[in-house]
Image (tube, rainbow, N blue to C red; front, top):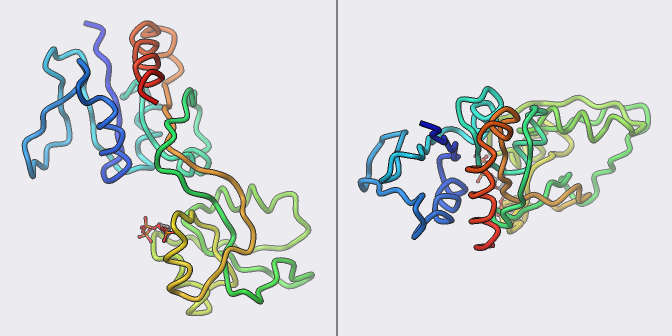
Length: 207
Ligand code: PRP
């Protein structure tokens, strides 16, 4: 059987992704409070797996999942080899450099310390700039880094701006817009083209 596997990020983005399939033949019913990580739709043609956001790309790139829903921030950081076929227009936020209002981004010969959950992305952004940097990889609460003098600035996603504001920080430079994207494994795109196109049309009609 030509079954399709869809990888979703555990949490808000995955829940919103799943909502797109509500009231369609791809809908799944989940038991409340279930810790299960794999779900099939009624007809058994589609499986959904729930993984960490950064692992969505890995599962799709390796072909274990045929398609996935994940934030553009994760795609940019992962540098993986998948097709990004649709902007799903939710989970909107922005990549930005942030810090204290008086922080300069050009420190001439001094090293600019940057804390981020996205070290690869930071390297890419600063590759063309005449500024030496040190990237400090963190896994969360990145806004704390300038406060505790661990870094000069952060590169992070900003949604409402509340976390920055509540910690006395500001956006020093906006980088790029982020939203949820539909990604597809390159082999699946060829061999399961009809099913994937059906999902593209379904989501295209909803969005
Ligand atoms: C994200 C991000 C910022 C915050 C931005 O963190 O890393 O810290 O949300 O949102 P805002 O502009 O609406 O305040 P997340 O909530 O994922 O938690 P984390 O710090 O543990 O990564």
